[in-house]
Length: 335
Image (tube, rainbow, N blue to C red):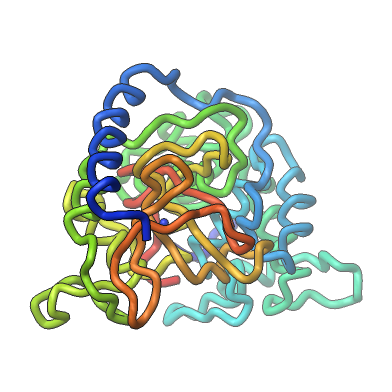
């Protein structure tokens, strides 16, 4: 979805490890039945490294421009639009990190950095403009019943007239999907304010991964017959969750956005754990594994190695994601 409404426009010993994992698998179900629901309604701030460091200050600042938006929501929109690529351009002529079309930019682009010009290719202008545009839309539908943020997002997709006409999010499948997508992605960019719910599919994903222990690594491997049943890191995690009906993106840095991000001391078996040489930028993530508890994961580490247990507490540990069905479905396929 682009800004196109121009009308207003994740080596221990194998034998011991398997028994350990099976206990943890059972534990996932126990925990799943006992944790509280939801993350509450506190003000959302950005999760660590969720936005590339070059843009995080802009997103944090401008994401507080009006009550209808917040930094995590603005980050979700930018990720959905361009994957934080300031040179992105679509076939529909949408341009830059926020994917404005020329007509919308002409009306709603602002000089965010005060340098005297409005440059759609410059995130210093485009990110403030995206926030400003959101807030402008919110002002048009401020008297419409319902949630102001959802109404703003619906206006972004279908136009404010439709939101006013229907007294809220209109009954258009595309618009309803867009509102759900952005509000779901918002949770993957927000720092949780309390413990997040366990994944219902976690135990099955662990079972799949443990059955692959000892399998040789293959760069780009998806575990297919053509690959000789071999995997790379993100191929393993993708296949593990696919075995329980959750489709993840192919690469690790996009899998990061498949759900909220528990803290290190809140990890549960089945969480995806990520590693990077740049701890300020989720787009730089280079490795992923499936957490099994006790400070260990199952992963496909590198060429010449096999799928195995590895510790997660290393200097390049980036963080974790608790995969959700809705979170995985919300991820764009084009970033």
